[in-house]
Image 1 (cartoon, rainbow, N blue to C red):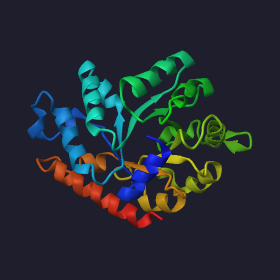
Image 2: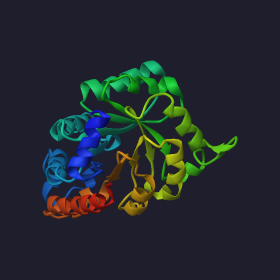
Image 3: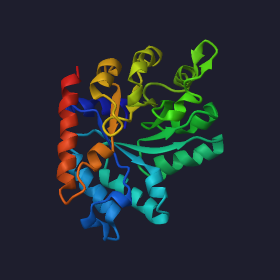
Image 4: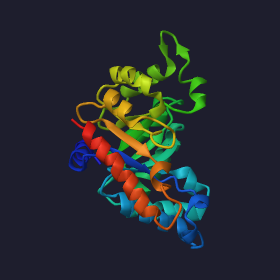
Length: 267
């Protein structure tokens, strides 16, 4: 999906919501848990319930890889079920020497129909470059994350700037705002002004709204650009809005509430 198509989708739906399909078999409602295909059935119901109000889905591959070959099959069926009408993110946090990243890019962009892959930049340009070589595909590079360990490296001084600031400036030069996004955690809201100084035009994938306590209003006010420039992810707050038979209805309600608030912030 190109930037133009993504922006058009945001305008059409008045939404920049990304629903995270971090599906944990242990948290699937009891009435589904006995089914051999419970994870896919759960994902299918969530997708059907939220299609109208979100523009993207983020599949955290770890939850599927943990199930072995069956999990990979479920992930593949899920991404195909989402279809071409939504922006599809493989939250895989890949990044390795060039020929290995070549294979990761093939896996998610050729074998599977994802639009984007999250990528760790620590190993440098050659580890990210293969993800930037596909037309209409995106590398979403880790910028400033919400976890406690962000203090260990990302927020350390690196000369006259913080390390994450150096990462943003350096990586931005490897691609364009049409094939590069950055991950910025919602709980780092105070940093968004500086981040927009460094990467004013790039899209930001923002996890941490909802269960992790990030403020949608603060993010939207500080980080939105002329094309919106945001994909705000909500996972647990949507997919686990209810643990009962009404889980899909509850997910639809939660997603619609996010969409309604987002519509009020869009320019």
